[in-house]
Every structure is written in structure tokens, then in C-alpha cells.
Image (cartoon, rainbow, N blue to C red; front, side, top):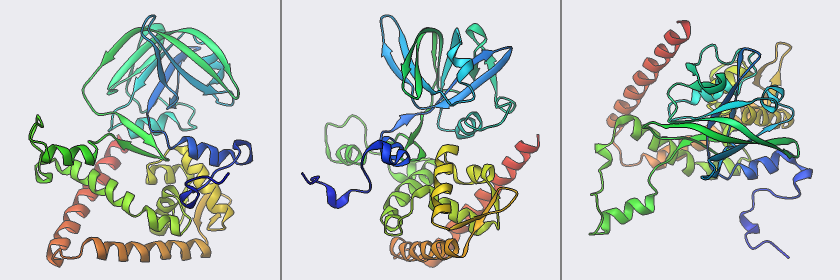
Length: 332
């Protein structure tokens, strides 16, 4: 029987036929981002995970899973305690550092020792210190159930992950529209001009990227692949680690995108494992740029040119300032 929505189907099939496609389908489910950490042989061990879930209030139980192929598998499979740190919206760097392949992932991360020596990440919006309650088989993963011994909650918005990219929760537009028309609404709608500039930047990026998705689909390219191509038009070559920092995606998502771009012969990889655009990649990047220019002409129609020049100048100054601060922090 034909799928009722086959006209809009992006991909599908048996999971074993294409595991990466299966993972992308699972990625349609939005999750929070956590760092789960334990102490092993006197050293901190941690991973970034979105497999975390609550399980029971009585007794207080949570669960998460770790791949058997993970370098941290032996530490967690034998751990008596671990801590779940739920990351906030400004902790993308922490998420990326703990999902890296570095030998010492904690060298640039602020943390304290919690129950059983498990690292508790500073700045997290919630922490759950646990003893290992049970471990179950889960195919190519094991499922760890933790009994929560201590929990803490702090102010802040959660860092989210869905469809291969980071995000934050925002009020649904339908509810925002309802608030403007419903006389019984408890709070008056806030004007966009009342919002902090950084919130406006996020909303502009998020909504603009979503609206541009049609053009990426027509080029048969994902958001991550598009960001990689854009980064490589600004740099002649980049390492994998540099690309991860440039595109603000998880290393696994970047690896998948790099693999697909290599298969499409859009990238070259040199002996130093650095990536650059091939001729096909340059053509694809150019096509995306042409689409983006046309998209911008449509979106900014009616806004005076001098206003757009001011906006570009403000954003350029803001970005340069951030880049300088990041460079200073990295040097320190």
C-alpha cells in the first residue's frame, strides 16, 4: 500500500539497508543534550548523550544508553556512580568538547567532583547524581538505569538537539498568535523590538534557515552539508575538528555529512586529513550562494539599502568582537 504522504517523503526503508538514514529519521525527535560523567581509575570520564530519559519517581530512576563501541564503554559499564548534567543553551562548546575524541576531554571544562567522584558540570541547568541501579542489554548499546541520589535545578533554557542541529525551545508561533488575539491571555504579547538583541539574532537565524530549507532540498543537500560548503568557501582547507567548530554540529553529524560529500565527490581530502572543495563542490557551493542571494532579495525587499548596510555593519562588528573574545579565551 502506498504511503499517504509519499509525495513529501525524503527517505525511508529498512533500517539495516542504510543505518545513517535510520539515524536521521530518529533525529526528527527533539531531545535535550546531557553530559554523563563518572570517575574511572582516578580520572574523569564523560560523554555527550541525548539518550537520557526519566523512568520512575518512586523509586527515583533515570536511564540512558551508551554504545558498546564507545571508548568510554568499559568505564561506564563498571561504574558504581555517574552524574547527568543537563546542558543549557550557552553550553554548545561543552557538548562538543565531551563528544570529541580528545584524550583529556575535561581539560577545558569547569566541573566539580560529586557523589562517587563523578564530575558535575558547571553551568548546567540541572544535575542528577546517581548510583548505578541496573544495566540491561540494548543491542549495540547497553541501557544504564541510575537511582537519583541528589538532584539540583538552576535557571536557564535547555540546549536542544534535533534534525542534526542544536537549538533552544521557543514559544510556538500559534500560541504567540493566540496570545495577541485572546482577550483572556494572561500576559500581553511582547513586541519583537522589546526582545534582547541576541534573542532576535537567534530567531532571525532559526526562521530564515527553516524558510531556506526548500532550496537545500532542491539541491539535495542537508543543513550540515550546506554549512560545511560555506565554511570551505571561506577557508581553502580545514581539519575535521575545525569544521566541527565552524558549523556548530555534533562530530557524528559532521562525520556523516563529510562522508556523503566525499561520496558525491564534492570534497578533496589531503594526506594531512584536511578537507577542501573539489570542482564539483565549488559548483554546488556557487549554486547555493546564487539561491541565497535570490532568497535575500525576496526577504529584504522593501527595506531601504542604507538600513541593510547598517545591519551588516552592526553584525560584522558583533561577530568580529565575538571572534576576538573566543581567540582570547582559547589562548588563556
